[in-house]
Amino acid sequence: MPVSVSNQIYVFLCSVAGGMLIAFIFDLFRIKRRTIKTSNIVTYIEDFIFWIFAALVMLLLVYYSNEGESRGFIFIGIFLGAILYMLSLSKIIMKSVLAIIKVVCNVFKFLFNVLVYPVRIAVKIASRLIKLVCMPVKKTWIHVNKLLSKWNRFLFKLNARKKYQT
Image (cartoon, rainbow, N blue to C red; front, side, top):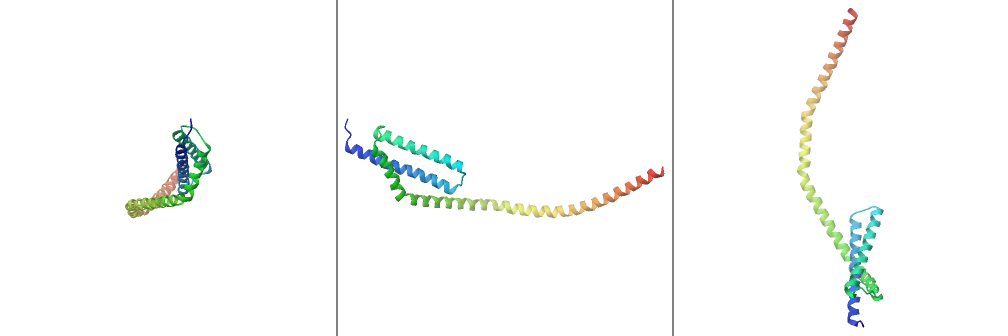
């Protein structure tokens, strides 16, 4: 059954869009790596997950656009779509998403500091009150301890005299 030129153009354009989608998914992983630092093992796992997503996009693209029949121009279209995305949209999307993430993080930091500020004030006040209460108690404890040690020495001497007198 002959395939029409318009159908092949449709499949090629779908493969270009699929390549752009794969490159966008790659940018999402790049954004994640720039915002959250991870170990090498996690990076390897993320790379593996990316290639699974890329393979799924390619398989779904071939299945839905060309009824599962793969052609060479499909892979050329995917490659071309990825290159077009990287040259045209990647920088814009990376900068804008990273800027949005930075603003959102700063807003959350500000809100956290605003919400925690009363707690910090309460802790300062409580620590000063504790110091006010504890200092006299500590001084009293030191005096009581000295008196108890004098009393113990007195009792020890008294008991020692009784032993020797009998």
